[in-house]
Structures are given as structure tokens and as C-alpha cells.
Length: 410
Image (cartoon, rainbow, N blue to C red; front, side, top):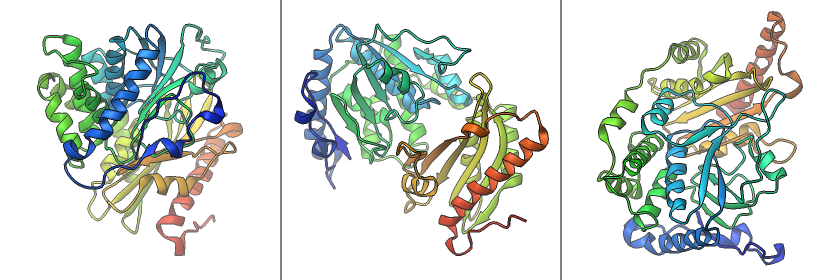
């Protein structure tokens, strides 16, 4: 789905278009260049007007707590585009970079991203007064802990660019959400192709951003195996500018010992029902959280398995909180990860879903609240994991094998 709208800053709420009114149906068939050029022109015009209206502003570009190559590269591309309009952007995330490829990507390309830990007694609150606008790239605010302080500071949401399914109603000056597009990096590359920034192969920042975008498209299309025409066209455009040596170095990053141990746990604990493998991996450090999706990526390659779900309890010592974190990977085209996860785990008290997904992948995150911590008592920690492990399995089995979804609690 595609949405693109421009709303006046001071327009009264009653005059603002609803989300339904700004969502344009995607053209069904035909070549991307001929069918989608009109839609791209309208989206580009809307974004260009927003940028012109905010010339000279300072914006906060918020990524999901655990940003991937798609988010990192897309945010950098937006920052370079915004700089053409004298808009200064700070790219931030609240969580951590733990996937070896993400760490290598940031290090080798120099992506200008900052970690802003959640506000707690151990982390000093950030001064948000310099910012006139907030931008969400590759997310819709539901996967970032930074949205709460931003909303408290009443920083207006000026732009959302994302390729995930809609999570909740959005109010922003420009909204570009396309749930049938494989990568946000493809969307940003299309903006580059439309002329919002002229890439220069002699500009080091442009070359490294193009390299990051190429990696973003590659990673979110499963090495281009799930790519669509628009992804290939975006990659062809970037091929004139990217650095293949840097990309190869990123892709050859070795798995850490911690990741290998989590994969080993997933293999040991997995159970397979109706071609779906489900594996709980116990407790993980916050910094090792990205081992969960890597384990899911590994398990889904097993023979006679089309879907893998891996989950564990992630402990953030800095914030003294715990979360049940899980990832889903599938090769079954008829399985919608977004629908599957939302149906399995539902919503919180505020109506926000605990997870969601995109084509062939998804994830969920469930705060443990009152039950967080106190894991110094090994018996209590073991009991707590046993309860959560069985509860998560039961919710998944209810969808995977409805006729026999109950787990023996004896």
C-alpha cells in the first residue's frame, strides 16, 4: 500500500485527511517504471514540499530500537537529502547494534547514527528543545522507546517512510507507507532516482551511502531472492556508485561466539509441528539480542521446515527490565508474518500490537513488567522461564496446530 500526503502545519484536526484518504492503492500489474512513475512523482512532490517548508530546521530521525541495514541506510539517505534543504538531521536509536553485519556496516561506512539509551536513573535525559520535527524511517514509532519522550516534548511528526504493515493510525505531514514494497532502502533509492539528491561517485559520503543502501535492499529481500522489479531497478541504479569491496567485507563478518551459542540452544530446544519449528533459547544479554533473528534464519533452512520462530528473555541491565523477544522467518509465501504474529500475541492495554512483520519475516516484543529481574535466584529464574516458554509455545501452537495446541503442564 502507498500513502503520500502533505498537511499544513497549522491545519485544524477536522481539516486533516484521515489515513484512509491518503492511502493510494498500488497499481496491480505492468512494469514498475511505467505504472508507478505517476505515484512516485506525487510522493516526491509531497516530500519536496515538506522539505522546503522546514528549510533550516533541525530534525530527529528515529529508528527502531535495534536498527537493521535497511533502517540505517535509509535514514542516512534521508539525512543527505534533507541537507540539500539546510535541514540538520540527527539519526538515533535507543537499543543496541549487536548483529555483526550491522556493526561492520556502521564502522566501515561511517553511518552517522547515535545511540540514545532510554531515560532512566542511569541515563541522562536528552535535551529535545533544539528539534523542530521528528522523522520515522523504517518504523512507525511502535518499535522505539524514544517515541515517549519525543511525544512528551510535543515535537511534531513531519514524516514517516516505512515498508511494514500499518501498526496504528498516524498523524504526520507526509506519510509514505508501502506494505508491499520489500525494503525501505528501495523507497529511498527511488527518491534519489527522482532527483531529490544527485549522487556523485567522487563524493565519499555518497559512495558509502549507496553501499549501505545496496546492503539494505539485499538484506530485506533475502539476497535479492525475494526482490521485485523495483528492487532490482533500485539496485541497478546504486550499482553505479556503491563500493563492492566494502559490501563484501560487511557480508563476510564472522558470527560471534555468543550468536553461535544461541543457535546451538535453538537447535537443542526446537520442536517441529506441521513444518513449523519453535525454539526457546532462555535468557540473553541485551547486547546479544540480534542472535535471536540469526537463529531463526538458521532454523528455517532445515529440511521439511517452512517457518521458524525463536524467542528468549532479553535482560537489559542498564534499564533493569526484561522483555520476551522473538523472531519469525518463513519461506511459505502464503503465510503472512504480520497477521500471524498479531493473531498469536495480540495487543497491549493501549491497543498496540506486541509485534508485526513484513514479507517472510516478523518479530515480537513483550515487556515482562512486574516479573522483571530477581534472576539472582536461580530457581526463580528457571521457574519464570518455564512459564513463559510454555505460554509462548501454547500461543504459537494454537495457530500452527489448533486441534492439539495444549501443552502438558505436568
